[in-house]
Image 1 (cartoon, rainbow, N blue to C red):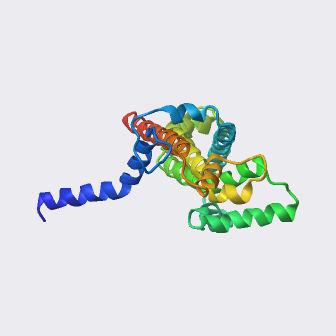
Image 2 (image 1 turned 30 degrees about the vertical axis):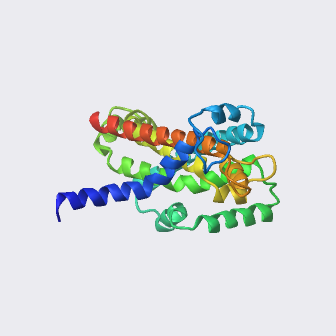
Length: 260
């Protein structure tokens, strides 16, 4: 296979994957109100977003839910990872392992329907709290995988040495293991944040009136037709997700350079 053919296949792959995103971002700077007709370069649709109260309110809800659910998912993922990595072969370990990782393979629509059935059965009204619970359920499995891998690569001899010097197991873990897995924790948090920010399916089942997320608002407006403002807010959302993923990659690389 010649190099020219390989490069051609590579370029075709990138075009197939990223051309729609590039077109969406370019059309967000379209001066024309018609998204299919290029009317010149303009940033007026980004300025118009500041006057769109429903989109701003949905953005606030999405960001608040993403931050809160990422914090909770990272904390719970850490606890689950510690149980799996440090507690040995306790009874029902495989059941616990499967329960924690099940959302990785479950279709989101099934998980969302299960959450909805649970909320209805328990008489819990849907809103911001149930939205956060749904996103924690979705993202906790990802944070557990990232933190479990980091914990397994930690040197247990260092913690044992700290306990030989008088530290309790909790102190040894906090002072020795936590600094080693700090980059993985930051990466897990950013991954959970982006997953929550992008989610549409789980939010559609878990949330209620007054807690409409940004992806839900965009989806509902797109059904009535694509507007330039939708292109602008979608481009901003893509940029935020790209920043979060880039930050996660930089944190992981910094950790590797420090030998963590």
